[in-house]
Structure formats: structure tokens, C-alpha cells
Length: 306
Length: 306
Image 1: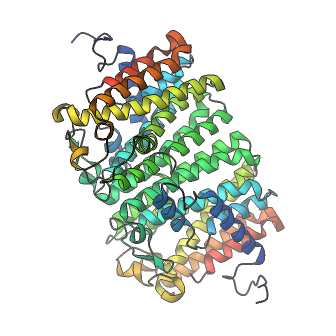
Image 2: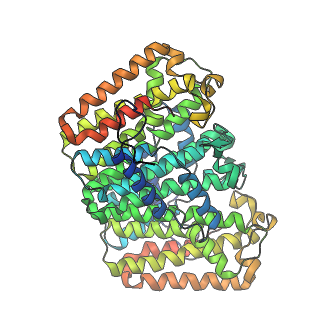
Image 3: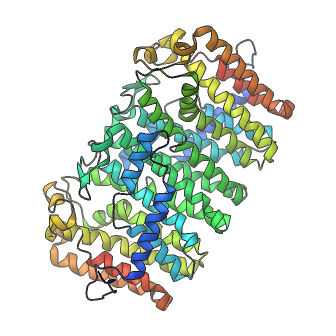
């Protein structure tokens, strides 16, 4: 098959540069995870299963794209790219647990607790979170100044905790069957998925030793892309096809979960998505051509078919 | 009641200095946790319930004692003291879950998932782990050099992950009903409880900017105390009183969990405990009088009644 060229008319198809960065992230993930044949074998296998089962790798791509927008080499960006994906993977393992969203399938495969049991899935998630911080703290070995590395750890810690991802999941659980306002819905998603996406972009900037102005621009971008990603998710839940999504379409509506279309309607959701994408583009305009990958990812987040 | 004086004949009664450090740790924990009245309220309440429900605070004390042995002020030691206790608390919440050890009571109170439900208990544990790393990364604000802070984060990350606490719990789950050798048992405990105790001692040393020699001495101490703590735990499970322990005595034996007494017998376990305590004392001999708190904690770990 000939190499696919970037095609702006086919925005869910990533360009060659992002594709090669996905390959780089995959390689970094494989070599960062503990071997499947050393003790505790089952835990290691569950961790690898949780992380290496496909996925869009959007968060690592955002790390690389943000770092490249500031002229940084990929080498310093590997650790934060891996760290954010480990966090994302652990959150999916815990979210899928019977006590949480009780999902038996993800990405067309049985979920971690179905394969390894609940206890091992809980522990695999816990160990993946710890590994993310441990690896990130090793980014000084790749040349990141220690003071920047400490900031990165602070940003990641905050994004994962009660003010970020874990807090968002708690708000999500509490929201089932309730009517949320648009502001409440955006706050919930800003925590649940937005915080880690935003952190990914910040980590790329911090690893590249960005100026406060550049970090602020990146943060506006990260905030807009994080929300756009979620609006697109909700739209896909309504109009996507299960076969393409790899999960059941209409699931949120069936579970009585508040979504953007259920609160502001489908047309307004589409306009909101366009608006957020424009906000993201405006934020990174100062980077000029160096922001090309960030632009591509913003378009992808808003137009992806799964 | 008159202030209790340190009493070497009553080794499970901590001296005044350690008692005031417990009070300091409690205060630091209270102010580090998210408020119980801000959103997400339930998550914040579950986190506070998990951490503020008593406990020996051995790990924070080890941080303070190690730092003081090197002449460091308590201020720099607060963040690592809080961090190790948050990690310890989160591990108890997850270990108590139905899919893990299925415990309904801890420290004389219903466990976190009994009060807040399983989903919230899982999330509270996740958020506590993230908070530990976030707070530790703030120790630069107290004057710890960034390069040391990065080392501390690396040590804590490693102690929590697949090579440490989470790995030890996986080995423990796999060991139920199996016969372990003494080496296997020590390896399991070295991961499950030893890694975090050892990390606590190291963090105190790193926050105090210790020399490699001092760090090595502290690590020998931490390793010995971590194991001694576990041997004492197993002895207490056989001869302790449930009312004093705050948990059911004989529980490990009933659950067919391998313990030191079940593998090498009670007399050999007691001798092993003495030997480990001596090892700990020898390791910190070079600190002289400055190591007094570490000595006291080593005696406590080996002689405590609960």
C-alpha cells in the first residue's frame, strides 16, 4: 500500500508525520512497560494489555506536537508522551470496572478486568499511574532542566487528581440521570477528559522550556481542543456507527448521561465544535508553520469518525 | 493527664518528640486534603475519610526522623511526610475493596467503600495517589533543590508501582493458599509494605540533601525496619488481641496467607525480628545522637502492640 499523504479534505486521516510519531509513541510505550515474563507476571501482563491494545494516542501526539511547535526534539518529549498515555490507559481500566461504568468491551477487545480479574485490573491501574510519575521524573536524563521537570510533575499530578480526571469521573457518576446546565457539563468534561489533554499540551511546552507567553498560548489551545474532543465524542455517540466507533453508539443517551446534543441540541453542538476549533487555531497562530501538527490535531479532534 | 515521658521499658509508647511530630503530620495532612465542602464533595469527603481516620503515621514519622538525623528542619519534610501517608492511605482503600481483601472494617470504622460506595472508593484512592505526587513536586517551594525533588519523585514513583507496593499486593493475592519460602515471603513483603517504608526514609534523607553515604546508611535502616514491621505484624496476628489491634487477630492464618510464624515458626520469627532491629540500629550508628528518633522508631516497629 502506498504511503498515505496528509489530506485536508479527509481530516480524520492523520498525516505521515503524525503517523510516524504514533509509531514512536508505541515504541516508547512498549519499552517503558515492565516485561511480561518477570514477576509479578500477571500484573505486568495486565499493565501491558491495558496500554498496548491500540488507541488513538492523541495525548502523546499532543505532547510531541506542542514540543515541536517550540522546536524541541522528540527525545525530551518521549517521557511526557508515555506518561500521559499511561495515565489515560489506567483511567480507562478503572472506569471500565463493574463498580464504575461496567464495560466488558473496549477497542473491540474484552476489558482488562474481564481478562485479568477485578483485583488485578485495579492494581494494574494503580501501578500504571505510579509508573507515569516515575518515568516523567526521569525526563531530566533526556536534558530537561530539573526545575522544569518538577513543574511537569506538578502539572500531571494536578491533572490526574480531584481537580482533574478523578474529580471529573466523580462528577460524571453523580450526573447520571440528572439534568446539567451547559456550564456544569463543560466543567465536568473539563475535568474528566479536558484536564489530561490540556496537561499533555502543557507538558510538551514545559519539556521544551517554553516562555510563559508560549505556555499560555498552548494552554488556550489545550483547553479548546479538550472540549472540542468531548463535543465530537457526544456527536459521534448520536450519529456514529458502532462498527467504526469500536463501542456501542447511543450508549450515553441510553445510560441517561448528559451530553452536549441532549442539552443544547445537535445543531448548536456542531456550531460549538466549530467555535472551539477556531479558538484552538487562533491560540496557536503565533507559532506559524511550526504549529502545523497542533493544527492538524485540532482538526482531527473535531472531525474524527471514531 | 500529665505528659507521658519517653520510656524505653515501654517501647510501644512513643516519646514526646515523636508525638509532637505526629501532631505536625496530622495538621499537614488536614491542610493538604481538598475541603469537604467543595465540588466534587463526595470525592473530597471520601479522600478525607480515608486519610484522617487515625493510623500510626509511622511513614511520616520516618520521613521526619530521617531528615532530623541529618539536621534538616521539619518544614522541608512536611511534603514528603504527607505524600507517603497519602500513598499508604490510598493503598489501604484499594486493598479493602471487595475484589481485593474485602474488608468492611479498619481502625474500628467502616472502610471507605462501605461508607462511600465502591466507585467513590476507587476514585478516592486514585486521586490520593495523584495528590501525593503533586504535593511532593511542591517541595521545591520549601527550599528543596529541584534536582533533589526530582529524585524524590522518582523514588516515590518506583516504591508505589509494579516493583513496589502494587507489585507486592499482586504477589500477595497470588500467594493465598500457596506455600512460600522465606525468601519469597520476604520479597513479597519487601515490595508490599517494605518499599514505601524504605521510600519514606529515603525521602527524608533526600529532602535533607544527604550525601550518598548517608543515603546508603538510611536505606539499610529503612530496609531492615520495613521487614521488622512486617514480622511484628505477623507475630501480632498470632498473639495480639483483636481489641487492641482494631482488627481481627488470626485473620491471616484463617485466610491461609503465608506469614513468618507459619513458615519459620514463632521462636525463629522473634529471633529474626531481633536481628532485623539490630541491623537497623547498626546502620544508623554513624548518626550518633542525631539518630535518636530513628532508633526509637526501629524499637517501636519491633515492639508495638498494634
